[in-house]
Length: 216
Picture (cartoon, rainbow, N blue to C red):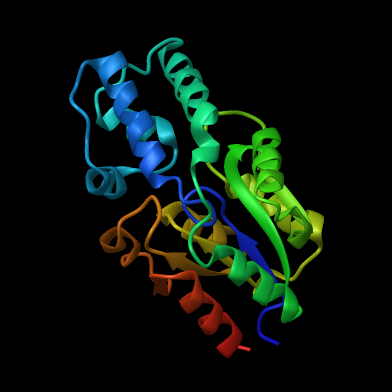
């Protein structure tokens, strides 16, 4: 088998939270900069890691404790509403099919780990994952170091691993750990940006399933 393990990203890949992220970000823009909100396409064309750079593009003051204040405010609003979001259509089916096909699965996310685990349990899919790793802070700088530790902890061969994500950074993480990558275009980055990554792009989870299983 070409692949034995699937690493899933969470936000935008399994959980469909783009709409909520844009709403909360626009709330932040109003409260912290006085600027008007942006639409989802503008968000998707600009969102990236580290998140502080994304904030800076839209006029946030990152000096002193300002970014920390903004981050805490964002998480307070987002977390109060996070379960208004559904999993992406086809996401649960994809997870189940991979398990039935003998592939192990895990989650690697820039979301704070305690909150990540709570969310996975909320959607009743925890049993499908051998490991759930998130960051130990809310700064969302990078997942690369976490990804390397994730691979080592699992003891899996990165050459037999594919990471499924929705951002340019997910491709960067996959490259850093030596895994393949598949990107879904319905998350936090626009297709145009993702197309420059060199990873295969998909519109649905069903398409990703067919691609990975046909690669076997």
